[in-house]
Length: 292
Image 1 (cartoon, rainbow, N blue to C red):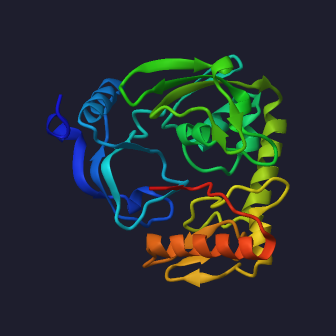
Image 2: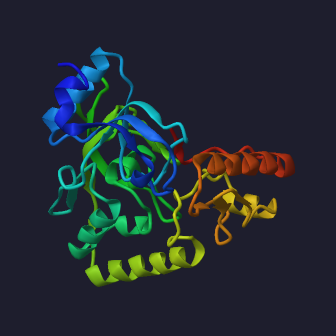
C-alpha cells in the first residue's frame, strides 16, 4: 500500500501539533494519522517503512516539546476512544497504550489493587509511562509490568515478557516503534487504605507542582542523589521568563507556557538552565521531556 494516498480517510496534512501537547506550542505535522484499529495502524507503519517515511507516535502529549518548525514524516496518534481499554482480572490489570494513566490508577484503586496509587499525579498515557518508566519517590511503573505487546517499525507485532524487559530511572528497554498494550501485576489491599495514600500523594504534588498550568511535567531527569529543581532554583532561575515561557516559581523543574509562547522560548529556557547549572555546580542536566 502507498502512504498517504491509501490512508486518506485517516490522514491530515499540516496538522497543528500544539493543541495535542500539554505545552501548547510547536509547529505542524507533515502527516497526522489516526488509525481506527490495529490493522490500520500496522498498514500505516508498513507503508511508511517501505517508503522510508519517518514515523513518530503521539500519546497524550504530556512529556513532549514540538519545535516551531514542526515534525516531518508521519505523526501517528492512537485515538483514546479506540486504544484505551482497561480490564481487571484478579490482581492483573491489562491496559491498552492509549489509556490515560490516571484512569488505570482510578480503576485499580476501586478494585482494591495496590501499587499504582504511587503514580498519582503523573500525566499521560500508559504507553508513554512505560516508555519512560514514569514514577516518583514511591515507585515506578516498570516494577509492576508482566508483559508488553509492541509493534516494530517494520510492522511486526509481538509480546515482550518480564525476562525480556528492563527498566531504569526514566528509561526502559522498550525501543520498538509502538507500545500497544501491557499487563501489570498488583497486590490486593483495602480500597479505603489505598485511596488514603492516593489522596496524600495528590495533595503533596498539588502543593509543590504547577499542575494547573500548561507544562510538560518535569523537564530534566534528576542527577543521581540530587534534585534538578533545587539546582535550577539555587542557580537563581526560578520565575525566569523568556517570551511566553517561564521556569515555574512553584517548582523549578517545570516550564510553564503562557499565551503567545513559542517552542523556541521553551528551548531557550532549557539551554539557560543547563548552562547555568553546569557553570555553578558542574552538573550536566539531562532532558526528561522528549523534543521533536
